[in-house]
Length: 321
Image (cartoon, rainbow, N blue to C red; front, side, top):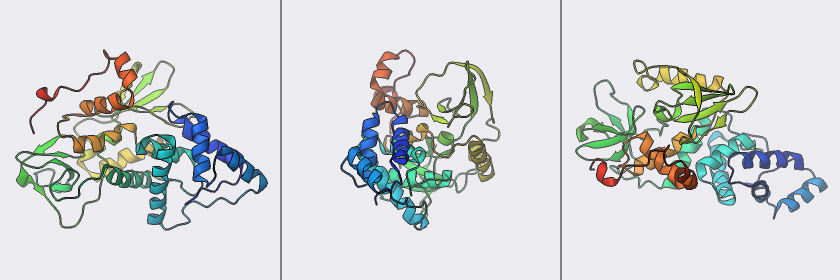
C-alpha cells in the first residue's frame, strides 16, 4: 500500500511528527521516508507531484478491521527500515504522524498491532513449551490468568500481569487447546502514580517507578524512556497493592479510562522490555530489563550517567535457570 497525501503541507506535518519522536531522526530522513511510502523517489519528487496534481487521501478504516491492522503492520516495518528505528518506536511515530489511511484511533487497535509486530519480529518458535507460548495459571486466586512462558520446567517462569518473573510449578500451568489472546502486562502499561516537576509538568510512572509519560497542559503526552532520571518535587499515587489493576478486568478498565482521560492511546516505551524478558529468562526484574535496553539504545547516556543507572547484574549473580 502507498500513502496518499492531498497536499505537500499535509506531508510536511507528518514528516515533522515522525522526526519529533527521536533525536536520532533528522527531518530530512523523515521526509525521505514519507516520500518513499508515497511511491516517490525522494522528497523533491513528492513535492513536484503534489504541487502539479493534488490527490485525494485514502480514508482511514476504508478496509476491513483486520485488513486495516495488517496494512498498519506492514507499513510500520517499511517505515522502520527507512527511518532506521526499531518497530515499536516506529509504530508510535506513525500513531502521532496521522498518516492518511493508517490512523490508530484507540488503545485497543494500537495494542493489537504492537502485539502482532512483536510476534512477527521476534520470531517466537511457536512450539508448545517454548518461550512466548501463552499459558493459563492453575493457581488459587489467579486461576485462569494468562502468562507468557519464559522457561518451562521445575520451576516454571512466566510473564504475567502481576510480574515479569512469576515462578510456579510446572503442573500449575495449563496449555489451552484454544489459543489465548496475547496481552500487554498491566505492570508495564498502567500508571502507578504521578511525579510533579519544578515547571509544573506531571510525569506518570509505573509500579516499578519507571517514567511512562510527561503531561503538559495543551500538549500531546510525551512518551518517555524508562531509564530517564526525573527530578521531581512532589509525588502522588493512584492505587496501592491492596487493589492493583492485575486483580480484575474491572480494575484494568478503570486504569484504561485513566489513560484515555489523559489523552494517551499508545503504549509507553516501558512495554518494549516484554520481548526482552520473554527471551532472556536470566532477567529477574523490570529494572534489569530496562538497563539492558538502555545500554543498547542509549549507550553514551549510560556511560555518562553510570552512577545514576543500575547496570544489570552479572550472570553469576542471577538466579540459575
